[in-house]
Image 1 (tube, one colour):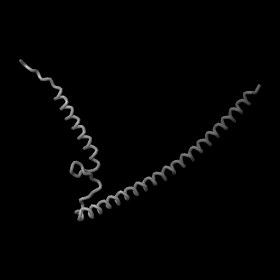
Image 2 (tube, one colour):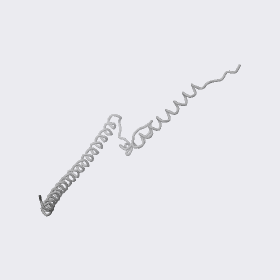
Image 3 (cartoon, helix red, strand yellow):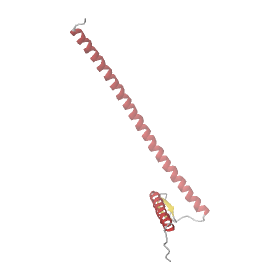
Image 4 (cartoon, one colour):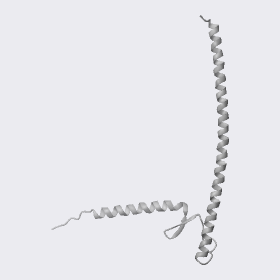
Length: 129
């Protein structure tokens, strides 16, 4: 039978081994985390660059459409008439960001009016003799 001293020694050796393994895993995890952080920053920089390039391409396409409108419709537009941040909605220019809300609002109004019309059609009329 092993003595208490030998068991304590084996337990201490095992504890040292477990501690060393944990430190190695922690070190490995920290290195992986650092590598992932670098990769994330690289991807974010590439995404920003792609966004900037896409925005520039969009502006070039917009300018091309304005130039074509000039040729097709016989005259240059007055400066400031075209703005790619605006959209034509029901015959007027509105900020592009507001179009979705306007469409939703109009759909809600149309739905309310439709519901009222159905309610009026379903009303009972009392006939008196």
